[in-house]
Image (cartoon, rainbow, N blue to C red; front, side, top):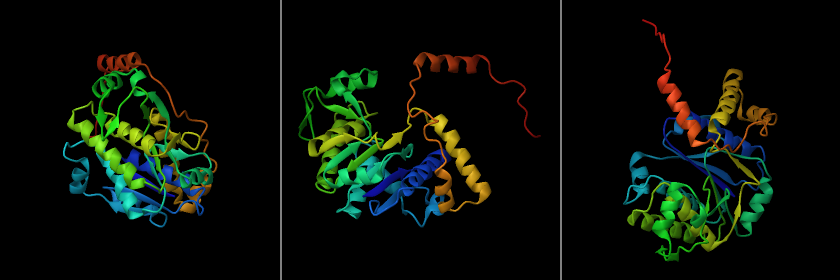
Amino acid sequence: MRLLYLVFGNNLQNHFQAHFSILSFLRQKSSDLAGITVVTDAPDFYQHLTQAITVHALDARTLEEWQGQYAFFWRAKIKALEYAVRQHPGAPLLYLDTDTFLHGSLAQMSQELATGTAFMHEAEGALASLTSKTERRMWQQVKDRSFGGVAMHGQRVMWNAGVVGIPAAQNLEAIELALRICDELCEQQVMPRLIEQFALSVALAETYMLRAARPYIGHYWSTKDDWNAGISAFFLESHLKKRTVEAELEALSSFDYQKLPIKKKVRNTQRRLEKLVHRLFPPKQVDFIA
């Protein structure tokens, strides 16, 4: 099994997250982990891990090409999967968003991938029954139609794409199907926010038995502030102590993964009130060095 990360931009927290996720897998490194590829436009941020990973420098032109005819930004995720599969066609592939970490058995997950089970992080429900404004609008736009030659009926499930595991058999076929679905959704001007996620959900379900990766991998997409604080403290301590990668792996053994929540729902009313309070009561007496 090979791991794949796609990380771009200068937000240091995203790169801290990627490092933390990679370390969580290296803790269980064995013959089950054949390699780790990081596709990034900031390769200098990965020098510390140079002995453990392969970095593919992503330039602006390639990123634009990966976004395709309709300039859909997250199409690049599917193209990164295609790139990795073409580099290593005979290996199962596990793509991970940066805000993830391994907490289950890598060997068991690798075995399931090797025997033809695909993974995404978790099923969010049939698109026809999801309740957000984006999902309701998306279902109205796709229902009873076909995209990529696949009929969109009421049982089509939306999966979270923070984790995407693809077995070696039929890997290019599955990715090419996801690209066709993605491009046709873009062509028909379907609500764009979840297009690549839905395209991967449908393509993998059509090609493989699809299971949730959540028993193996944590994905803290809704609690990033909590995790970013803990991860930043971990790497600040690493910097001050000049830890090697091996020392970081040892230190990670005492990191309390259960202390921080991986999911938290905050009501929109709370967000609006917080914004209102910040606007009504801005900071006072803000001074800078003259």
